[in-house]
Length: 179
Image (cartoon, rainbow, N blue to C red; front, side, top):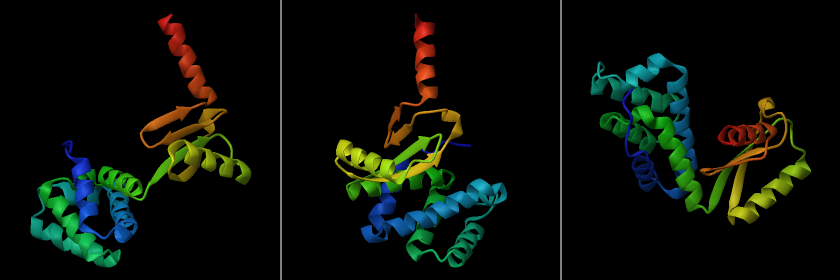
């Protein structure tokens, strides 16, 4: 599969074509299509492959837009990235578009990985701390990951904070190897 260049440019184009209030809905619609592409290789190949004509793919995108109740702008954007050859990177484009949108709204997204569920009090404390550290409202997604053994791992934008036992063991291993 060919690597698509200019992911951020495509994400910016998406956000420039829509009203900022409509951005979350548009991104969600595109994420659904990206998810369908990941789950169904036949569907993905039909959108990516040069075997199908532009007319055939445009018809499929139009039908998809109707079935998923996508806005006309989102449908047109899908056609655009199909014709430019960037549709194979739709998943990455939507991730970047979401981050750009959150940045525009002075918000951030954080992914918190823990081996156990976090109590509501600790969630509130963590969210308050993240807001204080970033200076932005932070949308937090909590994921339970038993492989961490203990501790917590937080992905905040492009930064990773790892205080898990697994992460500490990796650091110790690196120090022992390096001497």
